[in-house]
Image (cartoon, rainbow, N blue to C red; front, side, top):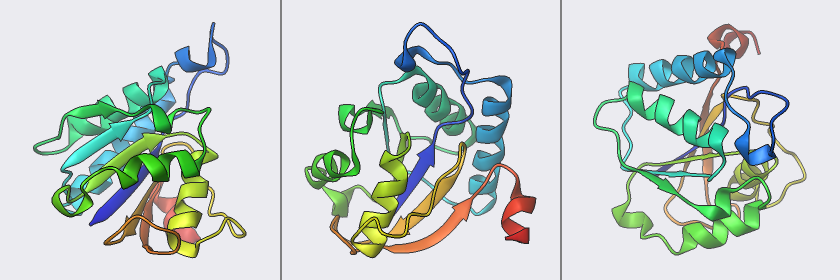
Length: 164
C-alpha cells in the first residue's frame, strides 16, 4: 500500500477561527501543481481522508479534481490540527489497509511531519518537515512504528526538489 501525506496549501494568515482559514490563490496553485506531478507519475488513489478544517477540505477537493477516478472525500477528526500523529495512527489502525490500496491523508503540521517520521523511523528524532503543498509517499503493509519506507516527496516547485 502507498500512504500519501499531503499538507494543505498556503492559507490566509487571519480568519475568525483557525479551522476557518481558507486557501490563498498561491495555495490553490501549489496543490494543482503537486496534483499534476502526481498524475504524471500515473498514480491513483482508492481512499482520501481529510481534516475537518476548511483549508484541508479545499486542498483535498482541489487535488482530487485533478486526478483520474478520484475517491470520495472522507472527513476524519483524527487529522484535525489539534491532533497528533498518535491520534492519526490509532484512527488508521481501524481501517482495512489491505483492501484500501492507496490512501491520501490531507492534514496539517506538526501531525503530518510527525506521522511521516513515526511510520518510517519509529520516532520523531529526525523530522522531515512537510511544507505547504508537499506530498510525501510512504510504502507499507501495516500501520506501525518504523513499518514504512519513505518513497518520494512531491513539492509545488519541482525545481526545489531537483536542486536539493
